[in-house]
Length: 425
Ligand code: NAD
Image (cartoon, rainbow, N blue to C red; front, side, top):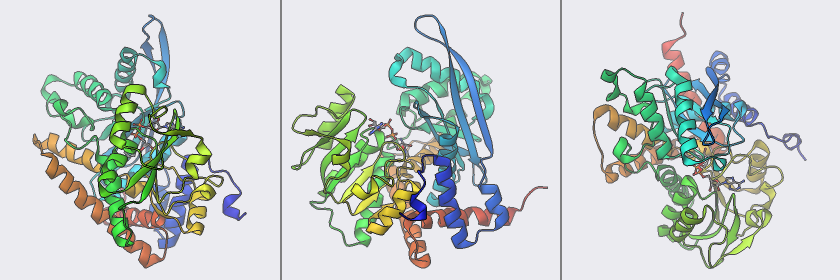
């Protein structure tokens, strides 16, 4: 056991610090800029009351953390999950700053959420919770200031409720020019074509670039996916036409496998009807360890954080991990994957398709435009391919891993702007 594998890395924000320091040391980042970027800018915690269906009031705790906005407005998702806490949101907000900088879009980093298990609430209760959270955040969000989007257990419908509540708090003259306060909206309410699949689409663009760069043939390659929500299901569906074969999937209802292949379209319909992958006809239920030990070429973690750790990294038999989720690999897991020669496309590069198409949605709203899907996909591909090769080039130059290289791209972009602008006063 090496010194990097003696501590359990369960605190996501500490993990971000370790990743950041490794890259900052490598490029000898200006110490003042290091000081600025190592802290989040604003941390908002709100406790707000909501009337339940039974007439009683329950109090909820919501978070919005704003890490940095030197490149543009704070940007990042809202998550509804029992594990949401201040350290998780700090980490996710910080990753958003790096992600936008790597993708080359004019946004900073923010993230938020509510500590709840949404399955315990009715649709009407979730609507009131979303609306009261928006009201409690007040002017801490705004179309030119901080722009939320969907994340775990939130979706286009929740964005529409947030939009409606936010606009209702504005003077009538400002409402029509403020629809870009959230992205990931339903199309009729100002959403963009291609936003629902954007993160999965971006994951696949990155896998394609990696395959090209490494002379890897996707035809017949086997892949496994953890999480079959927005990111996992779209990644799985978009990868299949390239000839890759989905052979195992895990979500919160269990894991399933089928060596002959699982049809991701049919599985998505099963999940929509049954709430999870368990019981999908033609597959065998397997346990978590068996799922991670599956003989396959590609693993797409697209669920929650800290899945590839000191314990589980050793189980993986794949050639490539393409991180659809945020923070699925902790620093111990990273070190083990590198030792085993498993390639990794890091979250801050791999899953940036979502924020890029959110940026396209934001632009369309500001310009009162509506782009067709081909235009969105074309522009997304260009951003993803550019970002991939920027990171790959830095990895070669510095003889470092892809995660550290991705950090270098982000830190150099931020350092440049701070040096040009200086610090007030
Ligand atoms: P989602 O709510 O649509 O799906 C989450 C999935 O994770 C579900 O299939 C759920 O069953 C599964 N899951 C939950 N607990 C699990 C467990 N213990 N074991 C296995 N599976 C489990 O969420 P999403 O939007 O697809 O987000 C997934 C990940 O991708 C998150 O890390 C999120 O931050 C990241 N991400 C999402 C977007 C986006 O555009 N939605 C963009 C970038 C990154």
